[in-house]
Length: 267
Ligand SMILES: [Zn+2]
Ligand SMILES: [Zn+2]
Image (cartoon, rainbow, N blue to C red):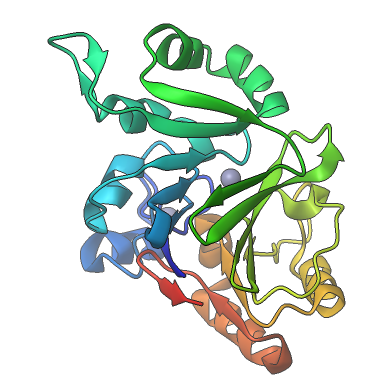
């Protein structure tokens, strides 16, 4: 299967608006790979998108994505789903007030409940105007598209607020867990690829997974390869990109790479 990292930034894009730090200046001036949109993943073979952050339209245009059939949401945070309007309205005929095509929008039940409160227009888009076809899913569900199966993996089982997706094809297994993985309680072994959020170097950030804890996770799960995404501008500014590279080299057995926008993975 072919996977494309559409966006690899943490909760703020790089350049960060208004910021004049060297990281943001460089991203503004030189573009990719320094410039990063918010995190999302595209599964090319089945035109499936995981997450739609606020800048999803820009990510899709930059990668020349011609169409999307399915969208999966990991959790309610704006940097993972507040671009939903642009995805579902892309095929909407505003003159006739009807959709020309409905994208399948897969949302875990509990996440949808939260979104009804935090992003209340979702009901208008999906239930009243039927701009997309809402499919409520649950931990453990397996959704099949041709040879590819996507398994819904709640961070903490059935009542999770955050979800990862396990993408399987012909014996290959990829887990996409882009955010807040400090709460990820399940263990995933036999992964060919883990796409996880970066671990945080800043010791005072207790609400995110630390780089040390992430390394422990990798040593336990032993994925064949790990790509770290959801990269924080703040962390690059504070530690320098050299530190990221140093950490990658420090653990050669773990086969770690840092994501960038437009990174293509064939697996
Ligand atoms: Zn900056
Ligand atoms: Zn996030």
